Image (cartoon, rainbow, N blue to C red; front, side, top):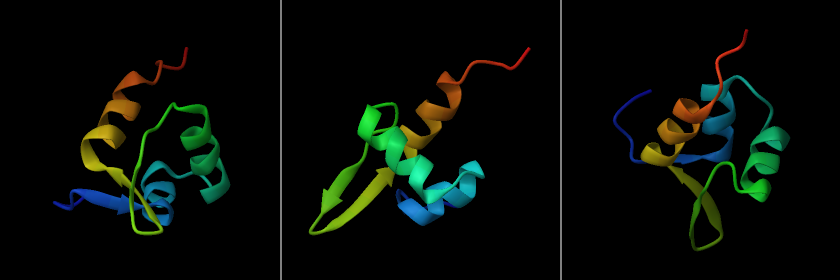
Length: 59
């Protein structure tokens, strides 16, 4: 992850190694939050890191 503050949905999907549709599911459920600038949905770096930190460790 680089020093960007905001990430587009495809970038988030790539970073998390999941599909774009899964990112939209996470956004819709509120598990991952986003902001809108005009018509573009963006995820803040801090929200992305908080989401990853909240994931349970697989057993």
